[in-house]
Length: 197
Image 1 (cartoon, rainbow, N blue to C red):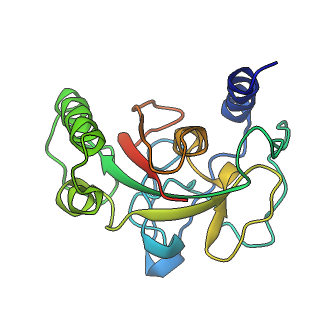
Image 2 (image 1 turned 90 degrees about the vertical axis):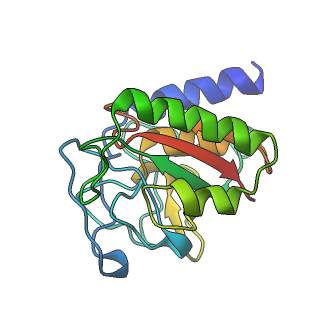
């Protein structure tokens, strides 16, 4: 079985797990609630922003290192154990609690793909984050994979919005991917994600 097949199976298991809806409320003095069960943006150094890709019920702790019920820890040779990513969240009206976003869902999708194209052509990602994100710049997160204890400042993958980790762990260092809006796996909009480490 090749790595892509294994990664696809792992991603499918991740999407079916039930523990993806815990939120990083209280981090950096912020909290967020969602009409859906997940949230999407993140702030620097692991501090949650008003729309964190972590989930909305409980703040993860460093002691939370086990894989979500119903999931299997990822094998180290399939995906990395730890990653660091930077992202741009593009939301739409009502998608990000506490943000007065006026663009429609269609406008958000168009903008997200325009930004993705610009980023892939080499435009400064930090500048794009500062200009466009509906989260807090610089939008950098560290994540540990399923069954891997989080390092300092990292969040467990199973405590994040599924699409955020699915894209982040699938791309290689320096590459940029996109997590499309999905009511279950990416409920706050589109994430343009760059793998830093």
